[in-house]
Length: 257
Image 1 (cartoon, rainbow, N blue to C red):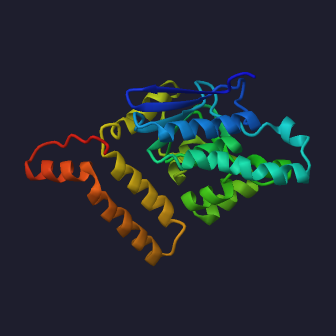
Image 2 (cartoon, rainbow, N blue to C red):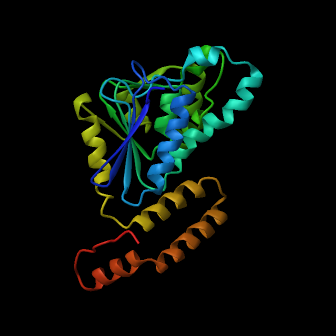
């Protein structure tokens, strides 16, 4: 079976590279390989940040429709939770994660990008959730993460119309965080997360957990969750180093512990 997801690590940054030409259609194999890649990079202490990248031509143009067209209701009842949890594994990597988007990020490709903390897109990129045109809705987080990111009205616009969004509009509405010339996408993504490689890994992990976890709670519960995570960091070596460095008026040297 061909390798459709490749993982590499360079200078503390892990890259999850989709490699199923021509369009990186997200079949069951690539979904499970994404889950395995996310699990491996989450556990690797040498990796401090992660890039999800589809290559120079396309991020991912969506699910493998030929594979899905053969599936019945019973088939999808069995498969849908695994599809959603595979992308959720990307979202749960306890490190900064950025999507580097060239070309199309549609359907499942857009959902995969939404599972990342940030999105860097090429100036000619197209994003969207066109599932409505197939008689279905997004099934791997699109309706939920899109609404949390853009608000319900804009999420409904994209999901219910199925329209594609150009990079300039995506930046304006907050669907992507940075737009750069197409040849610079991967480099820009590396630059975005490189700042975290030497940072306090446990505090970064806690910051991500606080924001993501708090979104699922009422304010009082979120504040209690934040307090718990904040207090826990006082048991870390990086807290001691950070505060000592501040008192001594020098730059901290974080160990990630």
